[in-house]
Image (cartoon, rainbow, N blue to C red; front, side, top):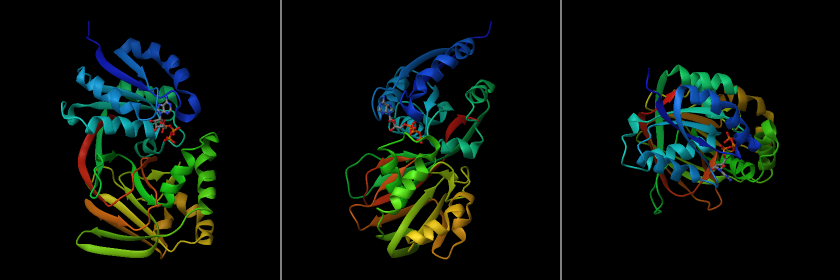
Length: 305
Ligand SMILES: Nc1ncnc2c1ncn2[C@@H]1O[C@H](COP(=O)(O)OP(=O)(O)OP(=O)(O)O)[C@@H](O)[C@H]1O
């Protein structure tokens, strides 16, 4: 008789408009056939971090996340904010039930619950880079991300979307439309690859590991999650009309070809922004603003895909 492996399941019951509980009831019997399961529902925002710490302390190394990009991001932050367990020995799979589910798009992980579950059961693992944000002028814990971090317009959209996610797939589009009436340019100074880039009218900075954000937009469409490098996109002087005119280019990746958009590859950068009301986001979760250093941890996570 083969010994069943232990898996720890984290379920966000409010993710993607509250389907978590139902999805869990549906897949629990199948999971029990293959694994010894311990599970925990999140009860408040960022609870995933404490749950992950506790599970790792209790010897768990294999995880299944039932949630969206935010739930996954909090799990990753739980993994990297502890020192007891070697992060490279940890594996995770995802059942994507969120609103945007952008990270899974890069890796071709199905949004069909049964197919996503089969990917975990097939036991084939992959690795990718992890981004780390270090606050240089504030005493705030590092923030980790596995998809994209952004400053400016997309940070504002995340701020809007996090207040109301009741519109399903349209949530991010409606957030972007609302953002059009609220955004402002910010002043920035970016140091990367021995170069300094300055702008008095920056619209958005993207720090990409993967390709998709905001429910399918491609702002770093050449990103390779395994090359040890960030894909940086910097858009300046983008006025309302420029956004409306180029809306389709946001989704097909051609946005990076416009004259106000510059792209770079780097493994480290430092960003300073002037305006206190400039929003920052990581994997669709709003994070603190400030002077930041972002650097990459090459192939630092192992997941089922
Ligand atoms: N019980 C809870 N009550 C309120 N918020 C919670 C709870 N559990 C987790 N959260 C928070 O919900 C947030 C959003 O979760 P998640 O991103 O997975 O779903 P989503 O926003 O619908 O999907 P996506 O990010 O893919 O668009 C996360 O910040 C998470 O910490």
